Image 1 (cartoon, chains in turn orange, cyan):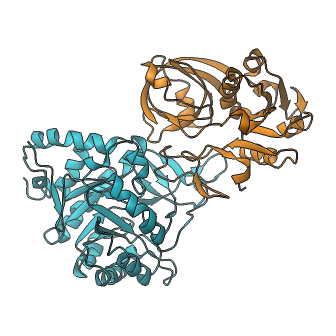
Image 2 (tube, chains in turn orange, cyan):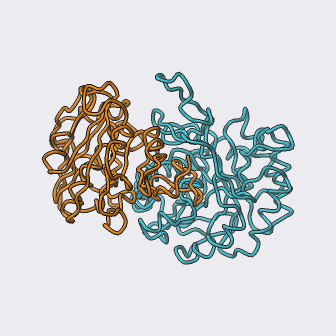
Image 3 (cartoon, one colour):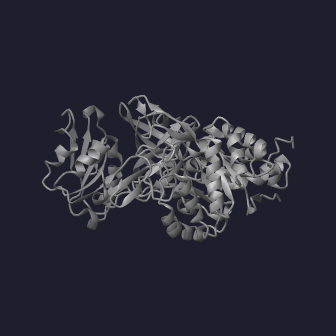
Length: 251
Length: 308
């Protein structure tokens, strides 16, 4: 974890309530605080006591890309900050995904639902840099709620979308899309709890990693506000997670 | 040079700043963030006899100027703390440690305190009486003078270490509780614990926190804490020291808490927003003391009562 200052540089609207934010680091060490895809940052917002934990979509030497869904007051304000606002950011939080080939096997599938798609983009990029070729299954409520499909496609990986109303890709949930894939034994998933649970229950899975969300206070393990029960005992989503392995998860 | 040292019932702290129980675990996470040896002390997480998983999710909600938590005393239990945390604390911190002790019966309070007798680094016991008494329909021990006195009596008989009772603010007259604890031999008091609160989610029309209620902390509670420290100092300040706790986020806040009557100051929620909050407060204290015209920070204690 590192306390960093980032400059709110630009935003791009992806859907009526989803935005892509680009934050610039004041120095290169700051963006380097992010060490693994699936980690998150905890942003202090003016006038708000608790920081806002936001998963990192992508990062470079000098920047962070975040995808933000307007869920409450904090996220509404975050996407409307004046450009060049300085943000106090705790970066490099959480464990992130382990995408080592010996862990994920030859044919891993990235599974995202809604805003949970965000960390999978950075994950896909790192896997490609590492010579791995993941596939992605991305689920949304409808075509109008979908985002980042072109960005994933531009990476050159197979992308199979799903939508609940059938307006995009496979009609149904990500599990319906996953069931059409010939080989789907290992997933790296992020999305709503109901989606994670349904994916976790797929019989064809031999393993996988699932990124959880929780209301947090500190984000670095001190307050134990975000504890969940796992097969290995109590675990903090912020510090021991947010990514947990299939075999340790209890629902 | 400003002398930042303070004394709590014969225990000397190099400065009055103490991370508050429940915001600092057993020191492990913060030891990765800064050298804990800058601290006067720290108060470890409320520890019960048996391991407790705590409350269901969600446990945290934001409020104007603060937060609610309903962690539910999640802790690994006294045995695991003695086996795993006490030896680790000796590696990461050389100063005196405050052990926050909880219980659900008088017997449990006494047992938990007695089990810390051989933990040399534990110099003060901070007894959390905002716990439900399982033998009295779940009524909190801290909610009336008689039951607060009964816990004090029980722990006083079980330990030779200084005992500081941590008072609940969710009472009509905190000074009465303070007097009852002092009369039973409390060596000091710590106040305030969190204020009971609730938030309701407009989307679900249900309480935001699974436990329904949670404890309010953060800057929002600071003036309540200052007032209660003032009241308790008036009631027992000449006899026993008070640790002020509640919403402190700056060296100025710490000085204000001391002027109200605190001999030392706990910092809680501030460390959750800014992990370096205690370090910054300690660094800023000398300049604040100079501005207030004191060469020893302990001169501030109770200063507002005598027009100092």
